[in-house]
Amino acid sequence: QVLLVESGGDLVQAGGSLRLSCAASGNIFIINDMAWYRQAPGKQRELVARITRGGSTDYADSVKGRFAILRDNSKNTVYLQMNSLKPEDTAVYYCNALHLTSSRSLSEYWGQGTQVTVSS
Image (cartoon, rainbow, N blue to C red):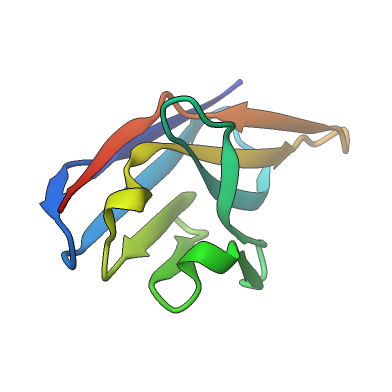
């Protein structure tokens, strides 16, 4: 079992910055892809950014050039640096991780979510 714990959500003014963190703990063998998703009220959960274990990244078009996803494999931690925040970035942000067990099976885990609110 892997536990993901997010932190860093807050209320910020438009144009400001926030940094989200997500630490994985538990019976970890290898954490493969890690990602951040978000869900705004009344909308579906959407992928914000993804990073492979090797550091390759992928971003939603709406955040390209403003957000950066990073990870520290030694700490099993992923970060989301969010700059130039807009009111439309307001959402609950969820951490997601793919865990590879020693028996080569993949399991997906989610964090509990952290609220980001951007005021205009």
